[in-house]
Image (cartoon, helix red, strand yellow):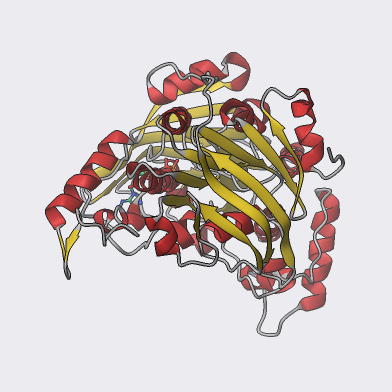
Length: 504
Ligand code: ATP
């Protein structure tokens, strides 16, 4: 197969149920080039890339490789043309090892499993692009960054000259982002082409040579990154100026809402994931939990919201003991939850938008009477969330799985915030949101705080933590390294503490 010297998409259009997702899009990439694709949630970025990867067929337009028009009917054909894609949600079999997963997707895998050959290839590619991966580890034992590397090796092994990365950094730790950037630079220097979808403008500016901006399915701008800046890109994307730094008003904290006393919790691997964690949280307060993912954040959120058993210790909300109570009981006591894994735990993908808008709330009087749901009220409620959060959807009667990733996240946030919770447990709430929606959400969290709610914010984004939180606990290996007030001088040490190298 000939190497890709030039890839062109021209006049690409695609509609779903008559609603355009891509309109007359032109895009071209050349060897050694990293092209950024930017756009609001639902702008059509993933759809365009799914067309290039053969997952969707365009309604019109053509794809040319090295000047020759090609029709890409499915991902196998795309791979055969030298195109690879790393999706937003990884496509790996969790109980299989790295080698087995790579063999599964390897186009030259014969009938018998060529373990030695694949191991050698993994070693070769790890060396060539300067990264390490243990071929015998099971996928569930790997961090998000390592899983992503498996996806990248899968694509490279299949001879990808062009690699599409759909929001590759949203699930990575700051350290893993640095590693990914260096892998991409290495690929670029070896002549690979990369299309990089991201909402993080700093990254786009750092990595990409060129950036294209999509709005409502159309290209509204394109520029070399050296000739533009963050502000102009944001304006091009959302059609207005975006405020990157939000002011947090000083508030006097109110009465105690949450008390966590010496809780111990077992993680998925059967080991202690939280060790003697204690803290209190008050009205009008945002309490940040900063840490590199995998250090107990998920277990803490799940323990408080009733999804994971607490082995010892006690949790109370407004003085009521909620330790090991059901998620519904805890929800009814005023605790809302935006989970880390939105598709697995935040929604029911096959149900309609309006069903998803009342998950956990269907028993409330305003939504049901005896055994019957009040669909008019439910639909009106859904429309209010859709309008308030500017969710891009054809209809509230469509299955939520058809929404773009960021719009799914907006619906979950709308649902969890709409009932004005006493306590909101929010894990990475801005994950996958575009810059405009991120600004909106952050302002909304501050508004919730002003109105008297308490918020626990799990985040790896230090900027977000500094901007929103009144107090921050740094979590490492299931323990709090420190709990600091936002005006504490030691705040600048949070990065070091996240890596476990300092305890106060
Ligand atoms: P995000 O940043 O939130 O991931 P995006 O720019 O990648 O957004 P797409 O996923 O391409 O957006 O979605 C573009 C539009 O197409 C959205 O309105 C979405 O609801 C719609 N869409 C995508 N796939 C389907 C589908 N299979 N059926 C119906 N509509 C779809």
